[in-house]
Length: 403
Image: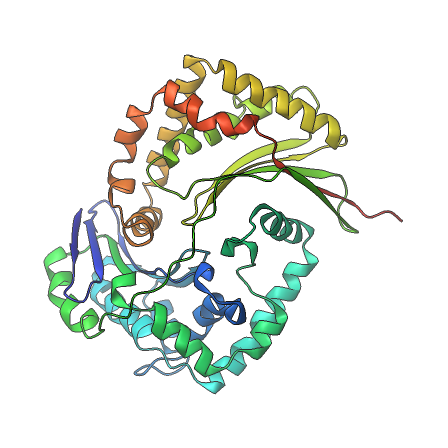
């Protein structure tokens, strides 16, 4: 794997893999929903839609048509801390993939026509999310968990903000955040590195560094114990979630990933053995959400008896913190290792992990040293890191709506 930075600050990672037929080219931008102002809520996601519409040198639909003709795939995703755009093509078209991703992201046309074309599509996405009880519940959960951090707001935004977006507002958002020092280009697959490097200057160096961006303030990892409840007519049985705030993401994430593995990875996991097999819940899972300005850990359960499920879970977690065994710890690490090895077999997944580490965290070692960090993780530090599980969490309840 080769890492370097262009003169304008754009980070580049090249990883040649002769075992793959295709090449994945991804351009990451540190420009997710967390960087929006109140009047921009939803702008990061809306802009992703608009960028796909038209560019300076390619007519509407031309990029999609060409990628399809070449037997590839084109897509994008917006999260809280980042947005990325990727093209996957047969390896012999790697240079064309670079040209297309550069044209798409660095030279978009943010026009009135494009904005008006995408607005009803995005508003429909928001409307559909309103019909999904679990999406509504997840949004409410984050709003209750975070007091100030931008994760309180949905990535899709709100109907009133999206309805008010103008080309000028989106262009301003683009100009502020789509700057080379906030970008990372990742190329993984079957290509010739020297050929790629010879094209980078012409395709990616014209962009100039931007002004410094004010980063959101990290939120303290102090969970306010509280409860809330929602009901919905399409819910068939109660669903309860417990959540805790954690420090901003970093290399210490490895311990929370081990915890996630221990709790819900496979039938040997604690939640399955201690809650599902005993009939306390229909299903249970955990999730570590690593975020730049304050992460979180949640445990979710579907159950007929939420109060019993919460009490049984609290007992399980208290026992885990106080008595976790060396064998359980080793098993969780081994499952995590195997899952990561399997995931990295895919060029797309590997490009994803590299892009996040290099662009969002600014720490390539988050990817390259993963297995070394996992091997070095010790049970005493693990006990210390998971002690938050004995603190009172935020508890959210989603129930069927009474007739």
